Length: 634
Ligand code: FUL
Image: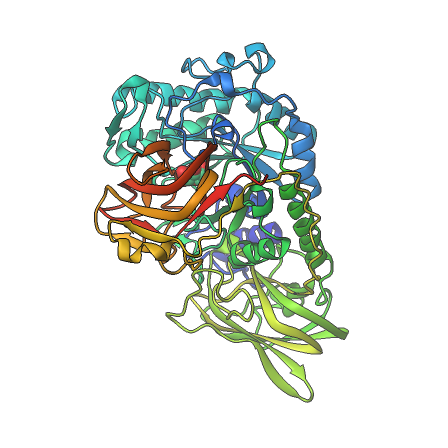
C-alpha cells in the first residue's frame, strides 16, 4: 500500500511538471527516516540474548581474561533445542555473545589462541557460533552476534596491535556464519585485566577513536549490508535504551537524532542474577507479569526488547527461566491475538483524501495510514466499533517511513452517555523513566508503536483519538484495542537446594563507619552502610560460631554508583583476631546492572566476618545496601 503511495507521489511529481497533477499526494518525509533494514528490524519487536562462555563456569559476570578454556565443556549443549524454545515463545531471533570481555572466542578463530579449540568440548573441534547459526537457519530464526570490543585477555589490548585481532574477528563472524541480523558493540571498555599476563589497568581514551568505528561500520556495510549495528559509539543503527532493567528510559522516545534515524533497544536478563548463568539462580527468575511490564515499557514505548536467557554449565537453558519465558510468551500472544478495533468505521476531522482517510487506521495494514493535510498538526478520528468491546490496552502506530511526527495524543471512550479520557495527552516536559506509567501512562510519542495499558478495562463501541501535538501532519497507520490476559503462574522447576540466609538478629557490627554497619543487615534495600574511602571494611560479630558457605552483596539502590564495590575480599575468624581470607574477586557490570551478587566458598566455621571493599566502581567510597551471610542447608 505504502509503496503505491510513494510511487504515486513520484509519478505525480513528474506529471506535475507538465501541469497534470490533480490527485492527492502523500506528505513529504519529515526529518530523518529509517532505512529499510531499520524498519524490518523494528518489526522484529523482541528477540533473545544468549550469554554463554567461560563466565558460565566461574560464577562471574565479567571474566578477568585469565580463565582457562579447559573449563568450557557443555556436555548437553543443544543449539536447536534452545532455538526452538525461543521461537516457541514468539521471539524473532537471537544474539549470541561470541566473545565477552574475557576475550574467550567460542568459535575457532585465527585471531587468537584463546579460543574454543583449546577447550575439551568436542575434543577442541566445537564451534558454538556455528551450532547456533545453523540452528537459526534451520528454524528460520534471525541470528546475530555480540563481539565485545573490550578484551581482557589480549596482550595487545589498548595498543594498535589489538585492532588487527578485533577486525579479523568481525570479519570471520560476518563472513562464515550466514546472515547476521545484528551485531553488538558493547560500550564497556578499558580498565584492569589480565592482558596476556600484564595484569594492568589500560585506558583506551575515546572508544570511537581507538576502535575506529567509522571504518568498522564501513567494513560491516560491505560485508553484510543488511546487518543492524548496535552501539559503535553512536555510529550504528541502534542505541542502548538506557538501563539493563529492560525499560526504555526516555519516554517520550524520539528516533530523530540530528540527521539520522536512531532506533532503541532495551536489554535485560530474564534472571535477576545477571547475564550469565549462576548456580542457584532458579529462584531469581523474573515473573511473567514482570516480563509483561518490561515489554510494555520497551516495545510499548517504541523500542525493541532483547531478553537474555543464559545456558547453564551443561549447555541447557535453566528450566525456571524457560517456564517464565513460555508463560510470558503465552501472555503476549494472548494480548496480540485480537484487535477489537479491526475494521471499525472511522470518521476524521480531516484527511488529505480517501487514500489517506480514517479507515486506514483500522484496516490491519501497517503500511497504509490516515493523514490530514500538510500543516495540520492536531486532528481527531472518531472510531465506531461494530459492537461494544471490552479492552484495556490501546496500540497506535505511525507510518515511520515518513519520519516520526507525533508528540502527544489523547484517547477518549464514550461511556454512560459521556466522553471519558482513557489516555490523557502528555504535556511537554513530562517523562516516563522507569516502570512508571506502565499502567495509566499518558500519550506522548508513537513512532513504530506505542502500547498504553489503561488503569482499568473499558467497555464501549465509540472512541475518539486526538493527535494533540505533532511536528508535522500526523501519519497514523494503526489504531488497535487489545485485552491484557490474566497472567498464568509460571511452573518454575528448581531442583537446587540452595543456601540458606543466616538470621542477623542480635549481631553486632564494627569496622569503618561501624555505627552504620547495621544498615547493611536491616533487610531494607534503601538504607546502606557507607564509608567515604576505599579500601574500607565492615566487621560483624555473629555472636556464635556458624558454618558459612558464602554471602550476597547488594549494591546501593539509590541510582548512584559512587562507592559500589568493584573488588571485594571476604574474611572469616573464630576469635576476632586471626583472620582468614576465603573469597576475593570482582563484581563486574554493577554500574549498568546493580543487582545482588552471590559469592560462595567451601564451607567454613566462623563467628566473625569482615567484608572489604577494595576498589569502587566510581570515585572513592565503600557501600553496602545489604549483605547476607549464607550457610549450607543441611
Ligand atoms: C554490558 C556488559 O558489560 C554486560 O556484561 C552484558 O554483556 C551486557 C549485555 O552489556 O555492557
